[in-house]
Length: 425
Image (cartoon, rainbow, N blue to C red; front, side, top):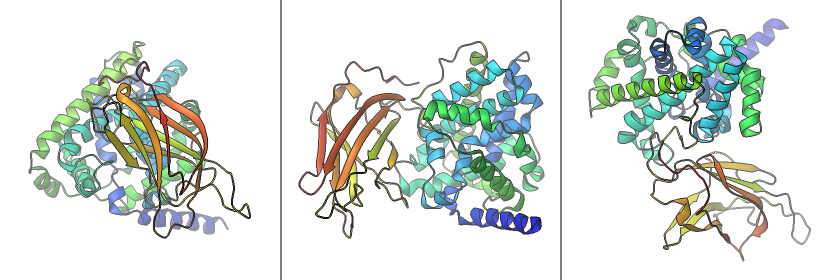
């Protein structure tokens, strides 16, 4: 019986890895490992964080890859990975800050190592996307056409950084990097999940988290779902379009940012952590950097037989109207996911890319557009929450049917005196 269970579990892991199309396997375990190691070397010798990283580097490697781990679940093959989305787009600074504050207070070096690794992931993505990837491939959230190049750039960085920043032999990389990770049982899941509950109001389960970890290790050991790219091929690719120079600059920026955040935090200064951080964008000079819209569909029913549910299959848009007459709207949709079902709480992370300031916005709206072949049309919206740069700008019950006769819900807003951290950081 035990052998059968082990075989079934292993088969499930391999099938899970094979589910993923190439465009979602933007894992960068080698790159994040190298950044964590170099950060360790550059922290003050007297630093408690440095001591924790030196003592538990294999645990830190899990932290350094932590925000990407939720990508390893079947629905990501359909573009749905809510925990990875939150870790990259929503209250990124608050979550990292709270983890580090609690870890330092506990004086637990395993927790400190894990969280310090996590913070190097944040600075790594922030610089990698903003300096290395986005100038050529565009922003992932906003440019589907550039996603294949986006993944290709990140993949090429793996062997290059392993050799040229980590100082390791390429054969060590090619032989497999699973040995850079500790045993899964060493990961401080309980404290991590407590912080997630504090910041997000919920958390993954430890079972989910362990599955993500074991699946990643299986991929790194077998090469299923993770490609060990040839160094010469990567160098040829990086030699074009100023890619190697951008990669070098992004790594230096990420390293300096991580060292600064960790050093100051150990001195009690957490002012550098920001919820303006959107890890797909990097440095953003626009006033609205991180925009999260959460819609709660109700459970009302109506119709002649009272059997028409609140959910809709039509297209839904969120929009803003400025005081000077400009309009910007976004389609709220997750590829491969059935949005706006009864009692759903759907989160959307939107790329702004304009100089619109919150104080310039006069109205916000939700609009439903009939989709050909849609079965469920009428939609009952219970609540709308809008979060700008980590701050709640709007959170109200709407309790409104949006249907063929009333296809748009609109309300005025006044955010002229709302503190939303609109300065670049």
